[in-house]
Length: 177
Image (cartoon, rainbow, N blue to C red; front, side, top):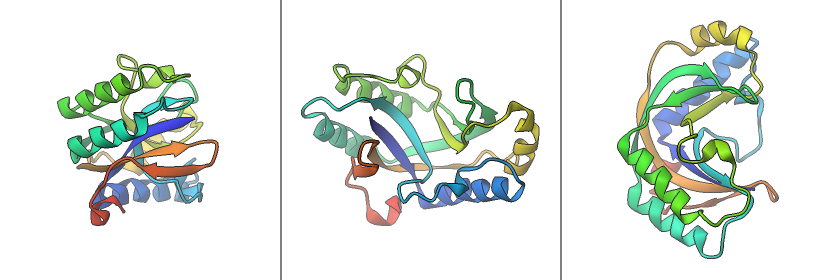
């Protein structure tokens, strides 16, 4: 599987990581326990089995032209399906436009994940996977009521076969960390 993901500004990433740690300290599921070097807060725009020929460069050009983008986090929620605990991201017009443009590039890609398709996509930053709905109130108390603001400053693609990432934008390295 290949993804298209947006990465947070250092300040916003720090806020999300801090929430991961507070959830873990409270005995709740959290992504703080995932120590794989590719694990970091991100917004997934698309996921497909493979990129069509030439798509990676087109995606990199698209992301380079669009970034940075505003990132306004909303409420903490538990999504259906695999029940991840997430911080919802508001649908800024620029973000929706980039999402649609990414899917234009990936229109012929095999195996699109339906939950990322335009019209079904719920923009979010994951806080925990396989979260029990019964713990949602406690998780919201731990996460707090703040609605952080930041930016999406870089883009990458995760390759699930190799468990590696590749850059999709020539971001300022000070912003992409």
